[in-house]
Image (cartoon, helix red, strand yellow):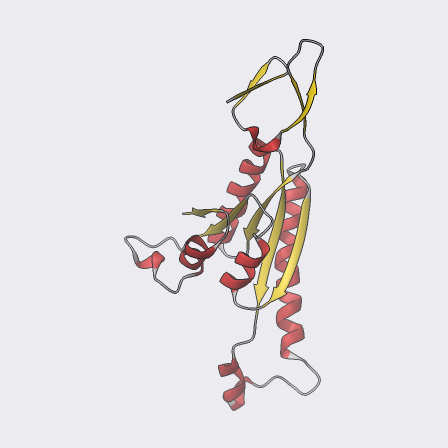
Length: 174
């Protein structure tokens, strides 16, 4: 804990001591920047739980939320003749638009909670996109499938990859 301007703050991460002294001789602290909490969403129920948890955590930390939605079209889609989209429709455009809708819906929820929000919709593997988006954040929040036992924590799952490789604290919300 740090004593700043006559008050005890447990979370000194959001405060920077400037080296100046207040009238009572104590250090002067300023909140120089909003901290970021990155939350991944794909529109699923598990992602909604993660978003709600991130909103509550952002209120506690006085943080901004960065909503991140990853999208990609697996190559296997193009190997099936029936899966090919009509010539006038770009499958990538359709998938990207769907991801943008998911991110916009999540961002609306964050704004309704009176928090600042930024959205990113990025083409790529979900774990890679989230890990990259968290590089300048304080925390990464992801949902975990609501499976019993360890089946939701399979080695290839997005939540496990994020927990193992993200450069920041990762919260996996069940």
